[in-house]
Length: 267
Ligand code: DGL
Image 1 (cartoon, rainbow, N blue to C red):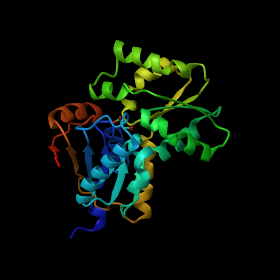
Image 2 (cartoon, rainbow, N blue to C red):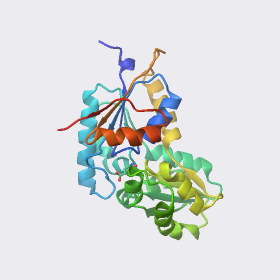
Image 3 (cartoon, rainbow, N blue to C red):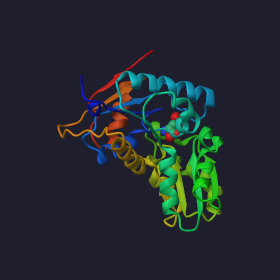
Image 4 (spheres, rainbow, N blue to C red):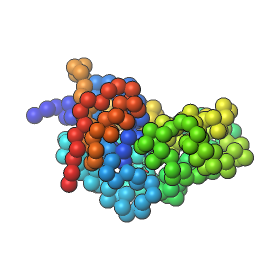
């Protein structure tokens, strides 16, 4: 039997968005094996109810747990916001993307005025505002949901006229709020960074949780004695619930390295 530290890290998202987190984790702990599950058959999560998102999250986690993972990463803000309590039933360390994102934003802000954008379910859950208030009760938070961003990213339409128009309309209410930090509270949104940044202007820092999550992963593995010591090359395996060809094309663009093997899993 393999030593526990040889087990992979399990990561899931509703689609390609979580690959932004995979990239950061692979850069931080390059020797770790990773198993990624993208629930491409059921994306987007962000417009669904808490009950449905929780059911999906538990099914995704069940699949990953069967792959003998040592750590579960919820690389989806929507699932982190809606299902993190239900996911605690697994007897293993879990890292979500909300706490690291909040920590990064709290470190960055100078004027204590923070904007949050995310899916409808994430914003509706108020998870970000509650977490930010734990850092600083007086922080000013303003949040907005951007439901069309995830389908745009899944279609690889992240720049150009249509994404710009959609983003200007969604982000307009934030402009007058004098925020200096904007949390990209959805793992798909870093892929729209350029478009969002053009609208918000240079003075607003865009914070995504990927690199802070990667740090958290390293710390968690260390504290559980689960860091992989071997420096033989690591494996990243990809699983999706629909159309592996599309995921492979999109994933290769987003990960910056070719995705060679994607397998489809059905119930
Ligand atoms: N990327 C996910 C998130 O961080 C889910 C987006 C969606 O499926 O709506 O919220």
